[in-house]
Amino acid sequence: MTIETGVLQRYSQGAESIQADLCCPIDYDRELLALLPQEIIDKDYGCGDPSRYVQKGDVVLDLGSGSGKICYMAAQLVGDTGKVIGVDMNDDMLALARKYQAEMAEKIGVANVEFVQGQIQDLALDLTALNHYLAENPITKAEDVLHLRAWQEKQRKESPLIADNSVDLVVSNCVLNLVHDSDKAQLIQEIFRVTKAGGRVAISDIVSDEAVPAHLKADAHLWSGCISGALQEHAFLQAFIDAGFVAVAYDKWESHAWQVVEGIEFRSVTITAVKPQDEPCLDKGHAVIYRGPFAKVYDDEGHVFYRGQRMAMCERSFNLLTGSAYNDQFIGIAPVQEQTPQHWCHAAGTLRPAADTKGAAHKADGAPSCC
Image (tube, rainbow, N blue to C red; front, side):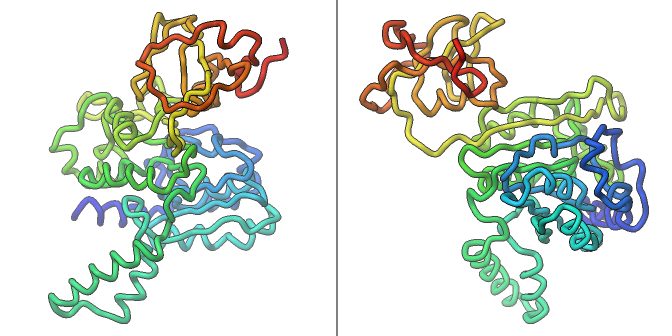
């Protein structure tokens, strides 16, 4: 049995009957759960609660949506101005999630949830469209495979399942570890592709404290059980940095391991990240002050921030650092009068003279101060 077929079979079983060993204990928002049918709750398998990162009006994409629990929780939060898309490759899980769509739309007051079939490492390929193509064009000879590949590439470009830069928030609950190691980099690049500039990521998953050895990775049961496909805890973060995300951080890191196999600890985590704005770095006179407690820190773009010093920043970096992604670690100081925009050319660690920002509004928690 391959890794992929093992995962497919185990989660088909999970759609049919409860598989208690596939999930960690999680404290979900009871108010959001109250509207959900018990079957959706019982047959959901996760290790975290990414729904708590959802904001009103968001377009949310849930990778490996399973029974639809996170989707239906998110639907209550995005409201009638938002939308939730669940993507899963498993027919049985999709059938379970779709079974309650009409009922949930009536309870929530809006039909704002859609479930689509696809592989999360290839979010451009619509598997429902692929099934229709294969029904009309069965593979009977080698030449048919070439025609299929051409059709797939055309479909990805002209009718992608999830379009480029279309999602405000990508969430996932204990699914990335199920993807084959050879596809994990592509998976995270796909997340980057579909996320809007300035959009966010909140991924709950299982990580290991040590690299998982080959003999454990070869165990299909451990893989489908969210164990042996886990990334090592540092490698998990680095994969998102390598894909181009910034503000990559562990927002949740369980102190107690969920399982220990051959001395390796496997635990639940939630990481958050932001896709940078697709705009030039223009210097208009902004500055930020790193609050501390460390003497200095660096970000993923090479900036250095000295504690208590007014560091020169382009407007794009200023907005990122003083937004919610950095949890109020920086004080933002806008110029009294914006300078004529100039393409950023300051070396890392350049200070902004206090004279340039005297009397300016200070920005903390994304809003001007009251004093």
